[in-house]
Length: 297
Image (spheres, rainbow, N blue to C red):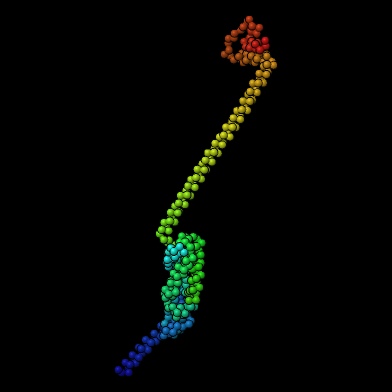
């Protein structure tokens, strides 16, 4: 190999090394991530936050951690004190503490390793352990039981995960599946309760209708009593009028004859009245005028 060829090869090698060093002299960390640098297996203590970092050691190898909020869903069989196992679906919301990313890499591994090793098994264990405080399986459906269970799981996981560089943000119980025979018993109980409520509603409706009927009957009775009272008053007034008239006639026998004269006036005023019968033998020959005779004798 002559000098010119050697120089060309050397220049090519140098160029490759220069390009490699140039490409490795900076690192771009995506949004919501941190990067942890290692040098021949040695973990650097200071993580690299999101953004561009220049210059960096070209021999560094970078491992990225997603520090955004994440959600992990798990299901666990939870035994209660009545020795029945209930399936509980629970979610944990968490994120990696970026400042602890180097320690996580040293003690656990990558992001996926942290989820698989630290979060998943502990979540299942805590859910099962906290469920032992539940007296009966059906108590899982009580609002206060679920709130207490969520709070206990959250506190226990926070205490366990925080020293390991994982921040627990929230615990949510998504679903609860009781043993089948318990589910059937609860459904049957609900059906009976619904039937009882239906009967209560029907009874209340009947009671309301009866009260309306009674109120209508009472109103009719009051109206009848008022009408009877009015009729009695009118009858009393009529009887009083008759009594007064009888008294007037008894005291003044000529009253009937006076009324007869009034009647004759009305007869005479009527043009259809043409023929009158006179009794010449009577001391009162005019018609009607003898009506008071029996009374005056």
